[in-house]
Amino acid sequence: MEVIVVKNYEEMSRKAASVIEEKVNAEPDCVLGLATGGTPLGTYEQLIEGHRSRGIDYSGVTTFNLDEYVGLPRDHSQSYHTFMQEQLFSHIPFLNTYIPNGEAEDLDKECREYEALLDKEGPANIQLLGIGSNGHIGFNEPGASFEAGTHVEKLDQVTREANARFFPSLESVPTEAVTMGIASILKSEEILLLASGANKQEAIRRLLKGEMDEMFPASALYNHKHVTLIVDEEAYGKDV
Ligand code: F6R
Image 1 (cartoon, rainbow, N blue to C red):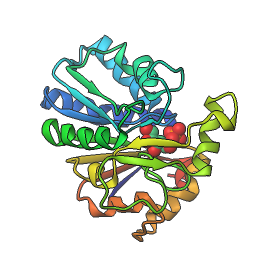
Image 2 (cartoon, rainbow, N blue to C red):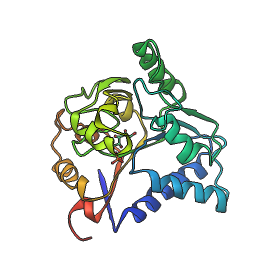
Image 3 (spheres, helix red, strand yellow):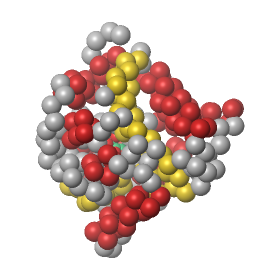
Image 4 (cartoon, helix red, strand yellow):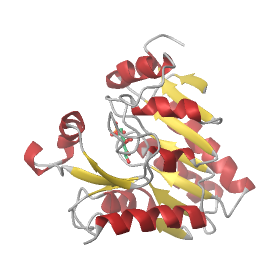
């Protein structure tokens, strides 16, 4: 795992965006794996800026999102469909954008089909990831199998509490999500893991110990040959 320590959130976002832009310029029909949450917001802002001011072209690019809440209508203000529409897709035209359908009647079928689509159109050339304070990646919570493909995952209490900031109450945070599994994530050619802020310090410290443990999902990334962690000083816990 290559570790790049940067000053702050903005530098992290710029660095991540520049890696993505370089890939899109070199391979205009590439596949990007995308995340939601607070971490990638600055990266998406940079991508939008690069598209507007430098004409970076995404019209041949396909995207796959990691996850979606189960049971939230697609047009709910906190669904990941809405998040992606607001933060990226309404600003940059892509060839295809895929997000799991958390409203599917048959969720197991939805998971199988999403994984098959990823196999057909993918793998992602670059997969963008954030990390939960409990070490989750996508919504693979502690204990999730490292062998799993796309599946329905029960959300940890810690995750629901962290995401309650976006909902009117803790009770209204969904209890399950459809998520790419760790095996789906590891299919990507290259993985960019981003972490910013003091609340990620403990997770980053544990990750960098380098011990693989299914109770700490991000440690599965040690099974991949091309992972870059871009981490800011607060999350890294030391001065650069
Ligand atoms: C989001 C996702 C999650 C987040 C993680 C960190 O699609 O899969 O793993 O990356 O929960 O969330 P933030 O960035 O809000 O701290």
